[in-house]
Length: 374
Ligand SMILES: [Zn+2]
Picture 1 (spheres, rainbow, N blue to C red):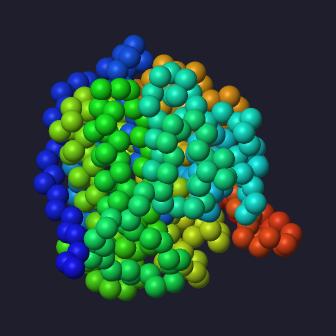
Picture 2 (cartoon, rainbow, N blue to C red):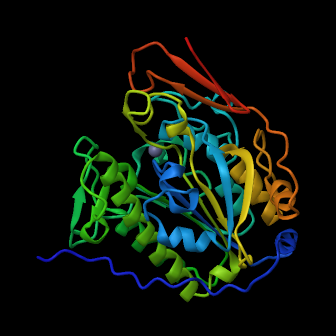
Picture 3 (cartoon, protein in one colour):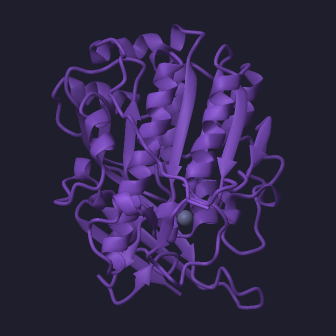
């Protein structure tokens, strides 16, 4: 049987143009949705919008030309489960306590989906990475939290990383599931979390396979393929009339190494190639030009920012801060705010059940990064 082909008729969303002053008015609206896109294993410097020389992300680049881009973003760990716990809780790994194979987010914790659900949002999480599965506490607050079924006719894809662990299906399935949810609940307030996985898997189809075949080429092909999936998701959301009443965010849990410090992959160390991630924000309106926030920010800041924008209760115990003042300062052309130190942490024996913990900590201040290991 012939495989599916992802054809994308991408056009730019038709939101009205406003100035950044409209940011402060968002909290007064009662019709806003949140579409939160997590692209697993996406290092910032392989996206066009972050200056990459290859045209890996034409859709993201065009979208961000009228949105907000954060130039320097640090994740809090380079292993998915630990990093995602920090992202959702707005807290560093030492506080979340999610550092090893057996650790889970405790039930007593409050997650953003719980706050949004209490505020009347329909909440759905669509994920393909087992480290964010229900049994690790990540489903709290979601009405529906599930791994999409692979399409009946398999997509014709190539796997550029033969050592990646096997994973059924592709992000096409995640996009389909996300669209089904948006179509069904288009008249409600929705919080949609889509966790894309094909960049992690170096997976792409023929149309995106034009950068070559070595490891780094295959990774870039997979970014291009993901960008097309995103184009399809956002374009369809716009056709449903959702983007004029949605805040859309794109983030990642960690980057990927290509032997910059002697190894490839992630979840092994805390160098810049694995801690520097993208953060892009698209508002319910277009800005005349991209607003770039130069100050260093962190993934723990993402949810304090979104809840602040929506005028919803803050995350209890969060250590991150709202980035709204930084956005407003950047719009006024003010100098970047003095930087706080940026922290990340990784237990390098996270996957060895009986091994003793081997913590590695990274602290960035200014241009310097201190790495400390036991
Ligand atoms: Zn990951």
